Image (cartoon, rainbow, N blue to C red; front, side):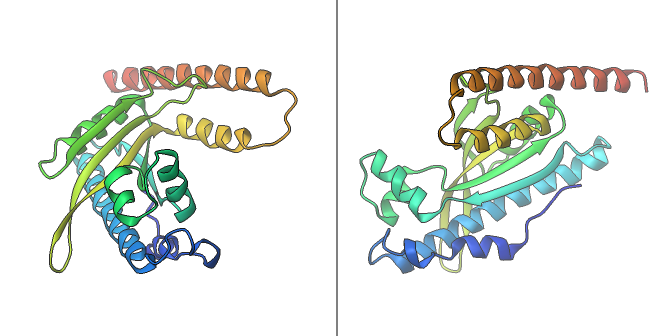
Length: 226
């Protein structure tokens, strides 16, 4: 079943903690407005994905999307990325330079579902594909696999339309499981065996990848014989 996040959780992300209010000096109101717009952009993309999933449950009798997650970068993360890029820490700079303030993660059962969902989403005439990175066919050195899309979606407000960029990551359940554990482990401090652990994490990623393709092959055989 497609898992939808409560609107209240998104609203909590728009709240700027007091200890982070200094990040965008004299721009707190503009920052809140920006975060609201990114929140709306996420809703637009999630709605499109949910509609596609509902349609395919009827036409193909199967839901390619298992569930959807979303997030908005925190103020300190936005500021840090702008500084790394040598850009001023302003709302205008964030909206002009960054493409991953708003993020949607789509979890599919099978690898071929990833590409089907990506193609259907980017084929819509109000979606513009800005960038595509295929870390499934070309995994990162640590073994990370996922399909990344930067898309631009129109969001209609009371008096204007805004084109908002959203990063969409599409991966299998197994890829998401590996990425979540790797994310936790890489932030552990004072690891004496770090090199061997990284080697084993890469080996686990390769095993998971083979399992993904094996499961897809089994599904295809079941479909052919049904």
